[in-house]
Every structure is written in C-alpha cells, then in structure tokens.
Image (spheres, one colour):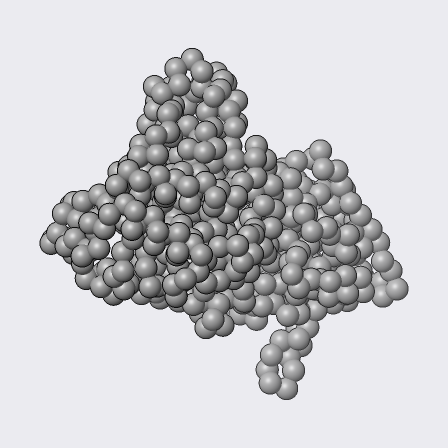
Length: 548
C-alpha cells in the first residue's frame, strides 16, 4: 500500500475489512454495454481502478449484459474497453455476466429447493399492481405457495422454452410488506426468446440485473462492490442473494455520490433524445460529457483523472461546476500545448511600405511559458491576415488594437500604424492598410516607444485554410435538471474561413494547440483530413472560475 493514504469513508471501510492485508482488495467496474461511457462513469472507473492500484489490489472489468434484446453490444463493449485504456487503466480479468449463466441457473434451483423462490404466473401489469406503492404494502402472489417440486418442474420448462415471453417469471420469496420495494419478491428470471450476443440461442430465460450482479461479485471474489448511491436501496437485496447462496466471505457493497455537472446532462435517455432531435451529431459529439465526446473535444486522461481525484469521495449528492473540470484541463495542457497563430475571422492587413516581393522569417517561442518546447520560424510578408475584431473604424474607449492613426505590435514582428481601410459596396470593411517601422522588430532591443496593443497575424501567402468548431455549453447553468432544459443555441459556432500559420499542417491527432489570444484547440478526429483540417475548440484560455 502507498504511504499517505487519503482519508474517506471508503478507505476506512477497506482498512476495517482487510486490516493489514489491503493488497487483497478486489474491485470491479461493471458497465452496462448498451451505451457509451460518460464523465459520471469516469468517476466510477477512477474509484474502482484507482483504489485497486493504490492498495496493490486487483480490478476486473465486467460486462453485465443480462438483457439479450439490447442491440450493438459488441460495438459498445469494444468502445468501453478502448475508453478505459485511454484513461490509463488496465483490468485484471475481463469478465462477462453471460459466462456465469449456468451458475446463475444452478443457484436459482438452489433457491427454489430452499423454499425461497417460486414460479409466478402473474403478467407484468399484474405484478406491478401486486407490488404495492411506497405508502402501501404489496400483496402476495396467488402462486407464492406453490410447492418446491412444482416450482422446479415449471422452472425447467421455462428453460426448455415451453412458455412464451412474459408467461411466467421466477421470483424470490422475501417480504411483500417490506418498506423497501426492492425486497417485495423481486423477479429473478424472465422468459425472453431472443439470442444473446455472447451465448447465441442457448438460453431463453435470462437473469435480472439485481440477481446477477451480487452473484457475479461473489463468484469473482470481489471484496468491495463500489457503486453509486442510486443502488443504496438495492443493498439489502444484494446481501440477501449472497447470503442465501452461502458465499463466505461475502462482498461488501459501498455506495458513493454520483457525479453531477452543471451545464450538461448525463442520462442516456436525454443524450439519445439530443441525437434523435439532431441537436447532437452522435454519442461522440464534443459538447456531450460522454468520454468519447470529451476525447474528441481534446480533453486529456490526466485532466479527467485529476478532476475526479480532486472532487473527492462522499455520499452527499451535489452538482460540480463544470468550470472546475475545465480548470483541471487548463492546468494539464497549458505548458505542453504549442502556441500558434490562427485567425478565426480574417481580414487582410496590407503593410504598404513593406517590400512587395519580400518574405522574411521571424522566430517565435513554441510556448512562452515553457521555453523547453523551443522555437519555430514563421513567414512574415507584406500582406497578413488579422482578426476582424482587431480593427475598428471608430474605436470605443480603452480599445488598444488597430484603428486609424493607432500603432500596435504584430506579435513577434513589427510595430504597425493604421493609415487607411477599404470597404466593399455593402459597407463591410475588407482591407486595412498600415505602415511598419523596420526598427521595431521583436528581439531587436527597440525601446524608444511603447505600444499598448499586441495582435496576432498569419502571412497571407503561406496561410493554411482551416475550419474551427467553436464549442460552448449545451445548456445554460440555471436550467439543466431533468424536468426541462434551456438549450444554448450558440453551443456550436463554426468558423468556416479561419486560417493558421503553416506549422499547423504537421498537427497530429493527440496534439493540442493554444491559438494565440483565443483558446485551446485540437484536430477533430472524426471530420478532419489532411486536405481539410478541422479543429475543435477545447476550452477558453482563461476563465472567471476560481477553484476553492
């Protein structure tokens, strides 16, 4: 075990249960393989894999695919495995619930023989009616007192496929008057005549999640089953199944608070609706908090793991400001990202006294805050692109960029003074004219006068055309509960005519850039190509968020 063990209720429980043998810790991450993982799953991944890593224990990856009707499971399984590796974790064993179907069936037979399980003929609607409510106890099924032999015979016939879907279920016999609805004779097996992606047509009866999950943990020797607080009410049922089968030692279920973030939704149902309504372009839309979406957006595994560690472990539910996640990301990429020149809304600046045929190279640091990243040469010429917002015909107060008669520095190059501008027939400014002072080249030691403004630029002749997806939050932070959403119509703005310095053509899929004075960007892994580079805005350079 590592020194300086962090303190939390889960750490205390592990120490209490395992004493000096905390390296015996075995956890598991059991995703449902019917959808992509999101930032909430990242918390569960980091807790289960991270604790095993911390104590020198083991963590299994297990797919709880007990429902054969869910589609595309093979695809999701591979995506989940890839995502976990991307986060920097490796599982001990790769397990599948379907690998235990034979054992589950044998355990169900054992429960019938013990007199604590029975075959029920109630329909799904009748079962709901008999179950009762939070304020009223349930009623016993009229089939609850079937004798053991009849139950064994009917359960075998269910397995043999002699009954249609929904005709019968196998239920645990616990307590229909329990205040915990999960304990009111829950269903253990249901009839589903559908092939399973891992077992084919072998089975037509399938276990429920509440039945399979604790038994999987026990079979694999999991010591601590760590899950979200939404499973707290299921814990008595978890323990009931494990104890009835007779596992010793038994796994211990411990719940922790789910992760809720401002300005977003994580529920699979809500994400699917965003996709179906054409708001999101898929499960990996960079505005979503799915892990494939965050990866495409440019988030790093280090930043996500750091964020999860810093929000800590608790049982109390709360909503974390998404700004804190962005803060962790900036901390991770600010010193490793190459700072480049890119102009998102270009307007031409013509330096009228600069030689028309001349191109010179100016030296730029790759990251002014991390000189270890070295320098690069950038072409400078008579015509350059600047941001349209860096010029005003009539400057507002405290505007320190270009306007008629004002002087600014072109970053890494020269001082220029605006002398004129040109409008098209609609009155839109299409060119800005300026003169430069050859004595003011950056690095020359010139100090006769100062300027208040520095703007970035890209040489027109060597500019690389790019497209930039300017992502923002999907929802406003005052209305992101499940009761309704207030959509941010500007959650995606596309800069179709952006240009960048030529060094950008060497960008790789894992590279992250700071576009000077703008934001952090990365190549879009889905739509970008060598001939049509597309960049996604990862996060703004600065934020008003102040972490506590």
